[in-house]
Length: 145
Image 1 (cartoon, rainbow, N blue to C red):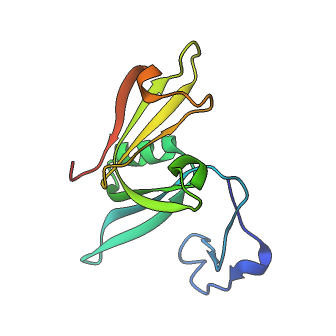
Image 2 (cartoon, rainbow, N blue to C red):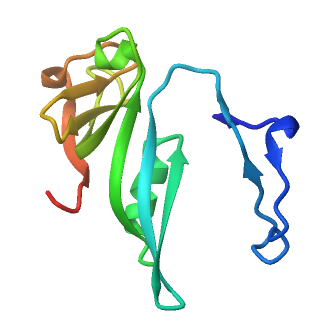
């Protein structure tokens, strides 16, 4: 979902020691779908906690991070386009819970994002309301919740 361009690549003299990772001054996003900004701890490195921030393109990747015993998700933010957050701009808001449910009369998942500020957004391909979803289940809860 995210794109990079060779002109945005930054020379990284440590790339060989870091397993060939690259640095980018910019990434591109072409579609107006929600994504996640995730703050996580990868444990201690030389006695210091290593905290990384990841840009994650889908809910399943966030859920898989939460299940990975080698990392601890400290915070997760929903970055949502205006179409989802019912405004005229993108917003970044901390997530409290994520629920999934099946669309009415279809076996396609929809997501309910419950945010720390009390807002709730429904990501539904069919513009379903939360009350119309079937088999709703909490699939993510913030550490502080």
